[in-house]
Image (cartoon, rainbow over all chains, first blue to last red; front, side):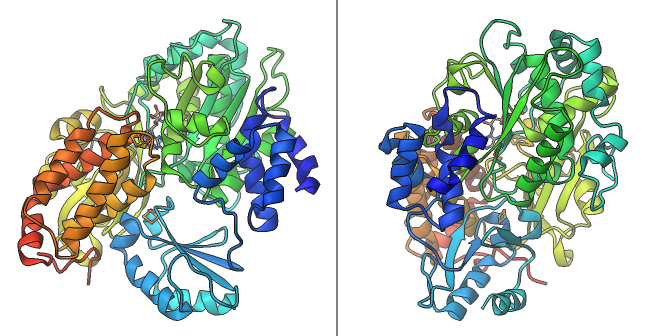
Length: 154
Length: 430
Ligand SMILES: Cc1cc2nc3c(=O)[nH]c(=O)nc-3n(C[C@H](O)[C@H](O)[C@H](O)COP(=O)(O)O)c2cc1C
Ligand code: SF4
Ligand code: FES
């Protein structure tokens, strides 16, 4: 994480002084973007850089569902299963993905290409069902579109 | 169009979100007018006079919140735009962030001037990518143009805006949870009093408003409170962005003038239901608002004074249309799973209650429900009411009671027969 410190310094400038602890979450997010997950050395780095207690970094890291301490597959498929997506057939889509990839939600394929997760409402209900692939939303999905998408990712 | 438009009043093009396009529409002229010709208290007075109500869910009068802040009282004040947009069914703030980000920035500048704020935040949900890039892009443009981070129009007023990205958590949308999140902790909501306008972010007076609420401020200051009040109804001035989803033919975000007939909105503006299906019921404003049947909404207008007496509310504008044939037991299962998943775990009635309710509904759907389960769901919902720190505990109970009251027969059928009265379907088939 040391190479990110100049970026963190830049970020810090727009915060009111004396509230460095506010940077715990933004720093962890940036580290995860960079490494794919947050490693032990990153936790120590954040503790040292922000002068916060380790427990505070652990607290944030363990609470927020998007933060992780282990890597995921090259492509992280996150299927929404909240109300609007359920009403537009997301259960079928998740079933389709389970069959196609041979893994259950929460698992990663043996080759490390795909991780499958289910998530709650992504705030895109008008174009349900929605599957997020890494950062990008894929909207109005159906099995055929999913197949095409996955072929493109292999 | 469902009435007059105040926010969606320009043509969306691939560049309409940029500073150049916004300026061509008259953007940032209102900021200059406010700074040059108005005192901070005048801005708050105008917003109060407009009768603008919060769009985050509770419809709290904006002027009343702002009036608690005392400009010049020698302590820092903060402003946060709530862009967490976590209430299932809601996706309207995303429209503003993607298509009118400078309207939000200008409004935040004007609001910060009124409230004597030097640092403000946009708290945006962690999953949003394009909306984040658009609002961050607009803020970068505003910095480059000298609108942020520099003294403006010889007034000495200057503002920094930080976009704070969440990381997946529904309670971060709750105002005090949001603040705790920005402070770098897990987003435990706080007991009130003290109100956040007295002791909020970093223990200082803080205003938190929804993105859509703030987006209305520029228009109010530009055209005046009186002009704003001419749109909508006397008790619900202005418009509401309705994001509609579910079994509707034309889902999307619509700007609805308050007072517009509800049935007409669904049947005409939204093209009726998918595959010509019949409407069973509607969740009016996010899953935490009580469901209303087709017969109930028939005579109603889309305004607070029309919907509230019917026992529900317009909430966050996240409307969900549900077709006949949809299984309400399975629908409630989706909601309770969500609430259980999102409970922050701080209050016992919510932490344990959500788990109990989730297990009960799972058991019913598995065909193993027992007769007392319905009473248990009622009892847990009622036990949550008013006993938790934030509104989530109550909301889950309201949503549950709303469905149980109107569709009790479906629950009884599921329990006695071990199967759904409606094929267990949530989808609307052709
Ligand atoms: C559990 C919970 C989640 C909430 N989520 C949001 C949200 O995502 N966005 C929002 O604007 N308000 C949300 N609210 C409402 C906020 O607490 C707050 O009332 C609102 O942001 C105030 O802005 P307004 O007065 O402009 O509506 C939520 C409330 C609760 C209890
Ligand atoms: S009501 Fe639930 S979500 Fe809200 S503070 Fe209590 S435990 Fe957390
Ligand atoms: S329910 Fe899936 S995006 Fe809202």
